[in-house]
Image 1 (cartoon, one colour):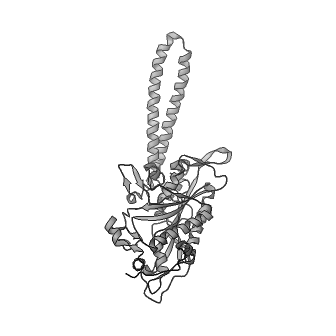
Image 2 (cartoon, rainbow, N blue to C red):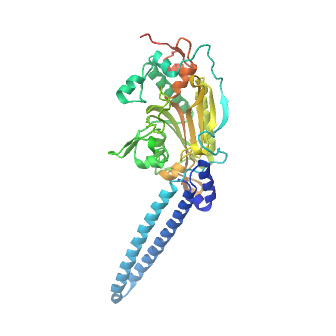
Image 3 (cartoon, rainbow, N blue to C red):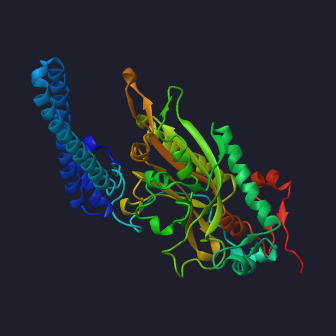
Length: 422
């Protein structure tokens, strides 16, 4: 949720942000009107309540013969206060609904436009060239007996898989490598719940444009998370944090679930776009003044992982229309996938400023002891999809794969993944 004071005092800034996102600016006017109605209703209620309190004292002091009439007036006033309180509650709910239709305020410098309007910030690493026809990750995975899509589909349906043998070890090694890096950077590891309450999912902003991708269990009123960001954001809901020693950082390891509702016909081969996968997510609670610097730190840690794995990649500044409702700025890091002759997203990091914290009521004490919303940021440090780029980038002509040196300690010292004779 955006800052109501900002909405009230600078609606043109909010409209500019909405326009950059390609979303309706009329929603801003509706939210401003709802805010005015809310404040008027609250003011009316508080005025009547003050009148009621004053009248109550008058009744208490009145002579006995006057009290009967005064009590009747007090009852009428109590009924008016009750009605005013109801109207204030209804106007508060209407304002919340109106303001929650607005996306986070896009930060200065973010490109306007949609999915294809990103800006490339840098390209890093040498794009691999092969003296042979490279295999795609699924063919390599099958040669290594590491990926089994057929049995995944047999057991669970399309877009499910088994990671087997060195495939399972590769994912666990990759995740553990990322976790070690996160711990060294001061993150506290968390294995998070993958089922969350509606108010937590709503609080993180995932029930807007992303709602169709989320699995919902109506009998339990719980959502399956598509990222541990949701549970990590909810971890400190309704709390006041102490940020006097700097950011509070968590690294959340979880299985993730996505319906991939809008991806029919896309990436149907292999494990690029599946319904279930594992992910290690960095999450930071910071003073809003430090949010942009923390965003750059998260990006640097992501790049450190990709460089250690010997992957060629690029960093893009995502356009406003592709941010999602919670992010004020998002960097995507895309690795080169040789058989697609293209960069594909492996990870992203988002600065959500105070948007999620306002919804989840997460605050910290600033100057003078006054509590204000924190800023929240997130960034993926490892996920199943990374296996795609690792297998394709480091493949050899015989179908084997050279294990990146930094990853070898996490695979028991294995230097090469060899094809399995069948």
